[in-house]
Image (cartoon, rainbow, N blue to C red; front, side, top):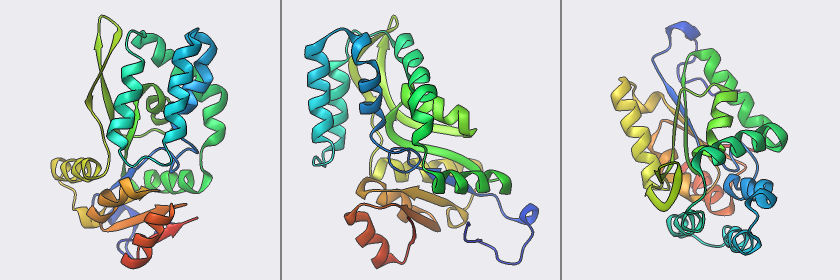
Length: 226
C-alpha cells in the first residue's frame, strides 16, 4: 500500500502528484532490450550479430558504464527496420513480456492511477520494449532511450540515453511543467542508476533493490519494496 503523503485527507483532495517508474527489474523482470533480442534472434537471421548482442547482455550486470553499453547495442542494430522493431516489441510483450511483470510494483502503479497521480515511465530501455508495457498499464508519459532513425532504418546512433542524473532531470522537469511539487511525488527503481531520481522526490521506493541501492535506501530511510 502507498504511504500516504497526506494522512487523513480524502483521495480527491490530495495535491497533484506523479509516480515515476524505472522499467527494467522494477516494473518487469530482466533487461528488456536483451529479452527482445532473445525473442527475435531467429528473425534477425544473423548469427554473428545475435552473438555480439548477447555478449553485451552478459556484460550488463557488471558494467556500470550504462550509456556506453546501450550505445554499443544500438550501433550493432544499425540498418534494422524501425517499424519492424516496434512490431517485434509488441509481439514480445504479448507473448512473453507481460508474464514477467512484477506484481508488487504493478499493484502500486494501479494504486497511483486510482489516486489520480500521473504515471510516468523513466527508463534506459527503448520504445520497442517500453511502449507496449506503457500502453498496457496506461502510463501517462514515457521517457526512454531515443535512437536515430532515417527512412525507417536504425542509424546506429543514440540521441538520448536516460540513466542516473538524467532520470532525476526528467522527474524535475515533468513536475515543474505540470505544476506538481516534487515532495508530493513518488519514484520507484531497483539499482544505482535510479538513485538520483529517487533522491529527487518526496517518496522514494527501492524495488527489490541491488546491494548498492539497498545500502543507499537504508542509509536514507527510503521505503523498500521486496
